[in-house]
Length: 253
Image (cartoon, rainbow, N blue to C red):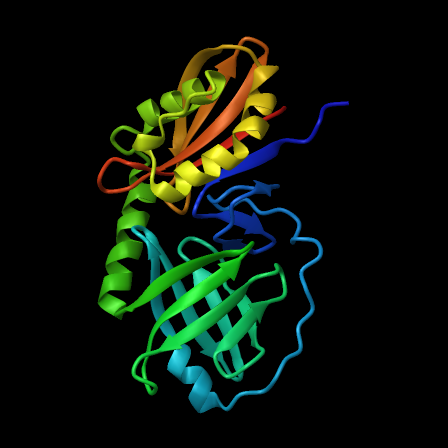
């Protein structure tokens, strides 16, 4: 029986968990381009409180997590929802007046007031890592979302992404990834997951060809990789400076 495909995430973003994509470094059952898998098992149950609509409304708006990633907070009645670029919205629930939790995954959002009456940022806490997102206005959010939408519509690879995919695979195989070509977050994740990556790809053998397959709904480039003994897929996200901001590698049938 063939083993199920496993995705190894090497980025400060994003792992699909049910209908939600969060900032997560680890092993996923899906990808950041729209395919979804089972919700994360073991998401903690949290005590919830009720907050006045006036307080909830303070938190609604746009928060920039990365160059092409915006977390949008909206309100439906007395429920807040969080939505990352290219993904469906997910409900978040208040534990305190400024701290909200997801039910689909063990993660928390803390809103940061500065001054006290104004929310200027949020922090997403997950797996011991804090990801700060500064608040931006609607025009900035729309500009980012439009840039991602244009990439998806154009369906052309980002400059340097194929080279980045080849470089990532070669570096893993040689046990010597080029960390200077990655963002610090990606370099850290790669160091942590290098043994898993090498083990997953070793049985496939040397790379024979790499073919561009398209752009997913968060702007990641997808490449199909043919090896001596099978195939893998690589998803690459480049930042505006030509640095690898995200790499998602799969090995399996």
